[in-house]
Length: 380
Image (cartoon, rainbow, N blue to C red; front, side, top):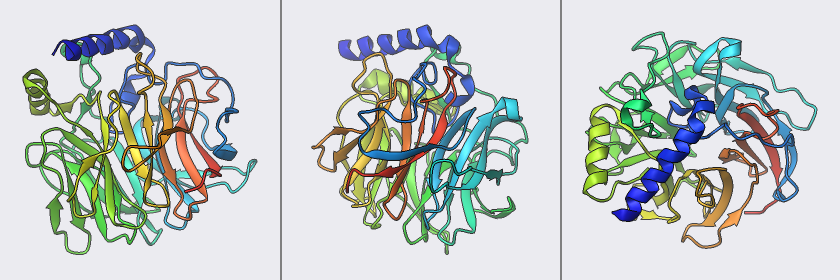
């Protein structure tokens, strides 16, 4: 308990020291960095650090705003992502699609494919490449939903679980063709299986924040996780045999009580997260990382064995976040990226040749987070 109190006080002090220069909007979605100070560090003006030997031909795709959760189409040619940029009239996250440049110097052109209303999050391409799925609050209100008053909760890092979030399928002209979820509560953080037939997503419909797998053809679904705590950001492995996700599990009476109190207000404070893996049906679940702090945004590499994820575990002040790879049994930890602020949301192209990620690098001393693609020369 003494250790828990010490860590909690440290995180509160970090937030107090940095929150005055932290953009509020980037913290109010499931994909936001789980620590105070995200976006507050001035990174060198470079797209690649000398130590980043796994990357080559790094290309910066966006330039300004908060660009996050950029994910590949099944044919490895297109990217879908979410963007907030008040200067461009985007007050909270909306979804955009663009063709990925093949070489440095090629222009990245993208277009809006969400409704432009409410707040959106967690986009993903369908197998046919003609549609996307994403979560949106637009049915609840066309306005951006209100952000939590963090002062009320001791300035803790908090994600709101907007009850108006549901998951939709839209074509690439932005027309919604199907509403995939319609439960009371938070439905978001969806991705699809390699064959495109199943969707895994996060919901609090049964009173806790758990993972569910839905058969898109029938609508039938199965609850995958049952342990108390937040489970989210789940992916299938490229071969379809496994699941990977991030989990924040409260331990001890005080932490459990706080978790339940926040959940009753549709909030979660996932400052400490670890990477978990299970078989595709949810069986044989086990924890991969045991580093403490925030280990999140995990995905399997093309071999369906090695894992890439973002973490701040090396830094007691809570940042930077960098990318790491690790074996499924928790061995072989390797540091991949080196930005001084934030690297996260890694995804390999389905053909295994390229990686996309989001970073504070080369942001001119601003708080912008941009999208980068690189050829991968690290194997696996």
